[in-house]
Amino acid sequence: MGACVSTSRSTCSSKSNGEPVPPPCLGIGFCGQKRTKRTFSDHLVTLQHLPSIPNRVFTNGKSRTSCIFTQQGRKGINQDAMIVWEDFMSEDVTFCGVFDGHGPHGHLVARKVRDALPVKLQSFLNSCQSRQNGPGQTCFMGNSKKSDVGDLDKDGSVEDKLNSLWRETFLKSYKAMDKELKSHPNLDCFCSGSTAITIVKQGSNLFMGYIGDSRAIMGSKDSNDSMVAVQLTVDLKPDLPREAERIKRCKGRVFALQDEPEVPRVWLPFDDAPGLAMARAFGDFCLKEYGVISIPEFSHRTLTDKDQFIVLASDGVWDVLSNEEVVEIVSSAPTRASAARILVDSAAREWKLKYPTSKMDDCAVVCLFLDGKMDSESDYDEQGFSSATLDQSNHSGNAAESDDGQKSEPCLQRNFTVRSAEENDTYGRLAVEVDGDGETVSADDQSWSGLEGVTRVNSLVQLPRFSEERPDP
Image (cartoon, rainbow, N blue to C red):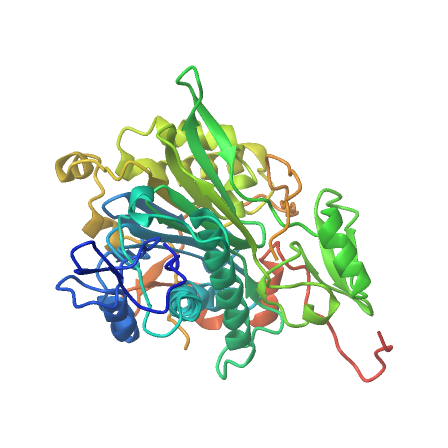
């Protein structure tokens, strides 16, 4: 993945016999020459037809290398979204993401980001690489190996160029995504927003960009061949020193409520609202002038044979399960295809046991198996949830769709964003119906008011009350 490393103006080098050969590439699946296989440019043409794109999974089910599952909590409509997109830019590239919405329209924000952000990543990667390569030298070649690259130019190594290319792509894509949300004519993101944890895997390279408090971990084997948990991202909470310093410098306030001292929140300088429980998010434009940003943390990791799987999940999972518990649950699942569902079921049980007076949060999980293997279809069906069954019995409660990396600080194993409710809650399933797009709609979503939605979402406390008497910040 990445740019051609040749500094020559020509698009091809020459063999000793004078035959032209392609320039050395870092690899993502598109080259300027004619190909019979599906190319990166083909993807760009068909992105306007997202539902028809093959190997793109965003409802409960499985793919060739992954399984995904989401379940509605007890706070109202499911505001979590998730996606696995295999053959993202070539046969060797996979995109995964989990998005946790909050606020009155958080469910719509999360799904908008789920659909639009991967498209922006593709577009900006193509643009960034074309600019780095120069005219006539747009090269993406899948399944590249170090031996294919040849001599490196004096500007740096292949890994440095690859890292730089993806960093720029993630930064620009996240910026464009937030800009699109701000100007969206039919989606009010003033007090609504979403987290994002996104990864791109190509061969042994793993690139990650994320904002908010959704988390990614990896199950890996240590020297004794025992499974261990490796946290890949940092929960970007407002009390992290770097985050708190920026927010306070922008006149925002950071403090926790008396009844939930473990949950730091971001507040307006002139009002005890909205109380956002994260320091970075898409949307939430009421706080964008006061230190909340949508600039992602970016990191790159080289995978090894010891690395077994990656789990992306929203904070509904991390609030009640540790990294080690998640790795144990996924690695001991009877089938790989059942891992995400079993993990969500485990989180639901833990919510009842640990927080019986709290309303369970939405949960969304993506399990990506790094060896590229899944169970046979017969094994999957024996567990009672084929991909077709899962797609039709989606527990997500989805509504109809609406139109600079620094070193990270360590963080706690659990998310600690739980806020207790005064009453006990029963965990019966809400009635759902399927909308025209194939996603399910919560029965109570039709009469869901904005303020009511906020009170059922722990990421926000209340809507701000703006007035003409507001003091100057």
